[in-house]
Structures are given as structure tokens and as C-alpha cells.
Image 1 (spheres, rainbow, N blue to C red):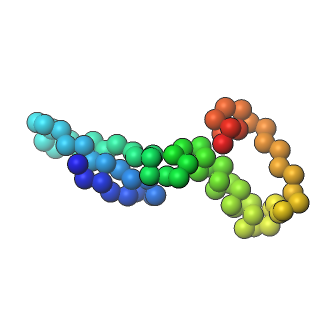
Image 2 (spheres, helix red, strand yellow):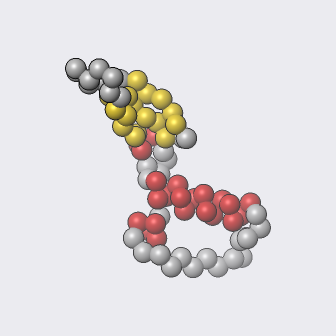
Length: 72
């Protein structure tokens, strides 16, 4: 197996017997500290808001979605 990094997510190239001309890659989410795409989305949104002065230390943030993004 060969590991490559694409946009901060490691991809593992799976060797297929008799798979000539076919490339199969697996995303290795375990290489992220949070291990979750949803956590990275929420982190990116907060980081953007902090860097652009949209929120600060005294800002109250109310998150209105449901599901795994809300949990993140």
C-alpha cells in the first residue's frame, strides 16, 4: 500500500490483485486529531470567523443545525 496526502487527508492506495488499470484509494480519517470531517468543518467556520473579526472572546455563539455537525 502507498500513502499520499491530498488536501490534508491521507489517502491509501489499495493494491488490487488483477486490478490492472484500476486505482482504488481509501481515505484515512484517523490521521486527523478529530478524526471527523464534520469536526474539521466546524473548526474551519470558527477559525474563519475569529480571523475575520466576526466573533471574539465575549461573543455568544448559537448553533442551530442538527446531526453530527451540531455535535461537533
